[in-house]
Structures are given as C-alpha cells and as structure tokens.
Image (cartoon, rainbow, N blue to C red):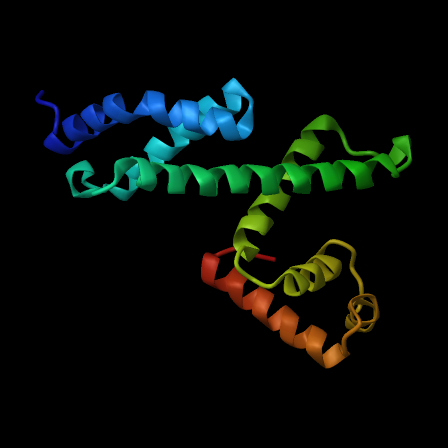
Length: 169
C-alpha cells in the first residue's frame, strides 16, 4: 500500500526539523524526557491539524510556537498538580485518596483547567470555589472581594465555557 503524499511530506519535514526542535525545547525544559515528549507532541499536533508542511513559510518559528504553547500547558498542569498535592497533604491519612484516585483527580483537574483556559483568573477561582470547595456565592464573593451578583456572572461565564467544550460540571 503506497504511503499518502501528506504522510511522506510530514516525514521529510520531521526529519528536517526534529533534531533542531528537540534541542530548542530541551534548552527551555532542561529535561531530555520532557523535551522528547514535547517535540513529539508538537509534530502530533501538526499531523492532527493536517497542515501541509510545504505551506509553512517559517518552519522553525511555526514549530517553536506550538512547542512554547505545549511547554506552557505542561507548566500549568504541573502547577495545578502541585497545588492539589499540597492541599492533599493537609488531609488526615485515613481520609486521603488512594494513588489511583489521586491520578483520576489530577486528570480531572487538568481537564477542568483546559476547559477554563482563556477565562479570567477570577472567573476560574469562583468556579473552583463553587465546584471543588462547595462554597456559596456569598462565601465566594467574600473571598474574592466581589458581590454575589458578580459571582453569579462569573459562574455563568464558566458554565457557558463548560457547555461549549462539552464538559459536565
């Protein structure tokens, strides 16, 4: 079975730019394994988007932009995971979730973070206070220094975002 032209072009593009991208990403991450994952994911995104490599005028700039976004997402996910684990450390051992439950919760938090990407930080905080901590709008307003009505608007924004991305809060 012949290899499709697109796949062949992407293979050549990968061969021409992978070593450079890996070195570029590794300078930012200072970790070979994470750099390899990020470089691979960069090309996977290119493949998923079905971008014709011949249409890319500046391949290194294009690839580094995708990689920079992936690095930022990786950093944000790690920050989120660390914040969760710090909070979990305060839970009595008898009530602590199992490692499997922790993995599922971190995955869920990552999905929530991805869903709420692009919303203002205060909207994200209001949503998380409501959904994860179970705080009332009054309590959320007190913590954020805004009115209950404003909290309601924040929640509407967050819930609309969840609806648009297909996530069930």
